[in-house]
Image (cartoon, rainbow, N blue to C red; front, side, top):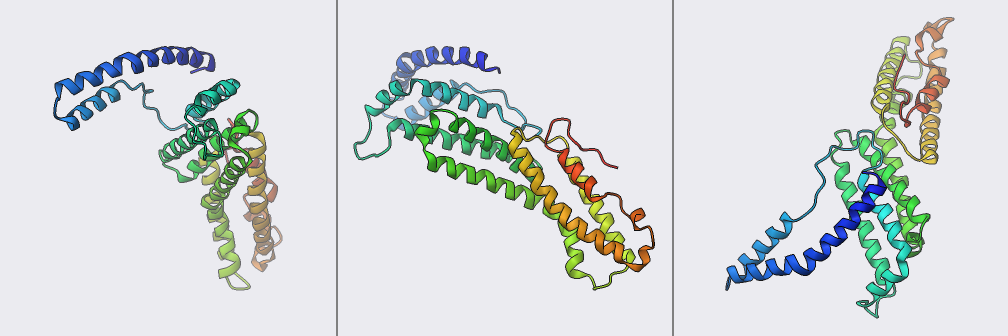
Length: 295
């Protein structure tokens, strides 16, 4: 749903909600109390069913296939940004019931609560993904979008610098979790060689390690070829980190392979990817239409 369509929808929701809260629900409450006179628990249950049946809900949807932004993230953040344009009016409304002992404004408390609900909702949606690695990409994307929208609007003033720092740290942790659950498994094949093999491993042993690495590397690139990181800076940071870690370990492995006497004068015949090609494959990821193909 486009934002312009959503604004029209919000206007209709506001009108309907006013009628529902002032007329329909109170009438239903009175009716339930009369029908289930002396049975308050039954009256409460009946009224709850009426309210639940009145809920608006979007059709069930599958997870965002590329781990990108979920529509609810855009809708909530755009709605809050628009709402904050009337910040003074909202503060007056909320401050009518503010506790004098509270240091934060009631509006800021409400905004923080909404953001917490959104975060919890996204966490639940991330569990839909069958690939746990894609969960971290999804949370990275949506977390980054939320922080950007907060920093670029009056939401930043309401939520405060501590909130921004906390959620920026969460994004960094998602990055770490992504690499640990994805590329560290690829690197483990080559690192195992450095720690578990004899000082002078045979050519066959090294070649088998390389085959397993190529297999894992191809599978990882293929699986992530359709994944998307919407933010250019985040996308570049992720690529640089992955390429640096892969290149260092892979270069060391190739150096050991080329030093094996049985490799002969043309050890490059055993090598499917150069260090530069490894970097190029990774740098083609995380963009729509990105590099999923392999040799």
